[in-house]
Image (cartoon, rainbow, N blue to C red):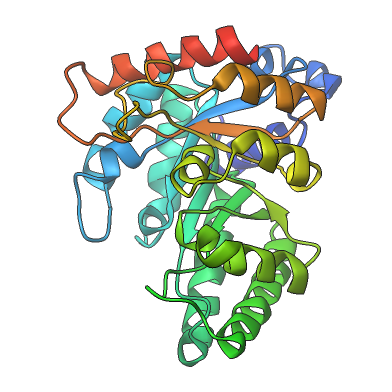
Amino acid sequence: MQNHSSRRHFIRQAGCLAGTALLSSLNSNNVFAKHYSNKVFLAGHLWAYASRYPPNWDCTPILDTVFSDMKYAGLDGIEIMEALLHHDDAVQRFDDLIGKYKMPVIGTSYYNDMWDGSRQNEILADVELTVSRLHEIGGTMLGISVGDAKRKKTEEELEVQAETLKKIMAICSKYDVQPNLHNHTYEMAYDMVDFKSNISKVPEIKLGPDLNWLVRSGVDPVWFINTYGHRMVFLHIRDQDAAGKWTETVGSGTTNFKAIADALKKINYNGKAAIELAFDSPPKNEVREDFKISREYVQKVFGW
């Protein structure tokens, strides 16, 4: 049995080598190697579980179930949320679960009001804590949501937001973590002013779009991929029906995933992705079955 330090090193190394043939040089018992053969690493985001724990979305009490379900579904890894890393024993807990289920944590989503200058120091301290612990458990992706002001942000607030993003990028660099902008709908409101400001003021920032939030914002995912795909390192997949309600599984709604898959192939997308399920009503199936069905659909349509 590997100790925690060596396991963290191994998982971090595996994450860095995703998509390359270099994993063949690792230990022949490497249970992750099969996931890195010329295809996109496909994780599961745990929102379907975290949504049961408002307002902080801390599903720590059921993390064992989360790991078990994602393993059952055949996913390559798990994307978590920052609240789970706030516990003092978070690193030990994740080390144990990663070892038990042989499932890596790919990264974490992260939400905060980065436009609020009065909170900048507090936010940066929290990012430092979150990213340092993420690094310890082998995670390499930070999906950043910059915060919803519930209105159009002022130019001064957008400047503060950009400054905060640059400082977050510097923190991430220390820990070999890839920051990327993860959108909801508010970034795309007012003719995408929030999104356009971010990529203009912080041109080096990478993108990790949520394709369903793009749809809900009235933004065509195929157009977005064709326009900004060269900046994409991550993406989220979810589905909805003709009435705009989330479907229980990916592939059971009206989203044109074939066109999205074609657009990604056209740009030779080689980043990472996550299925993030969400339910407008209680699911009929067990969540693990919904992830399994979704995972199989993505494999069929996207080839991942």
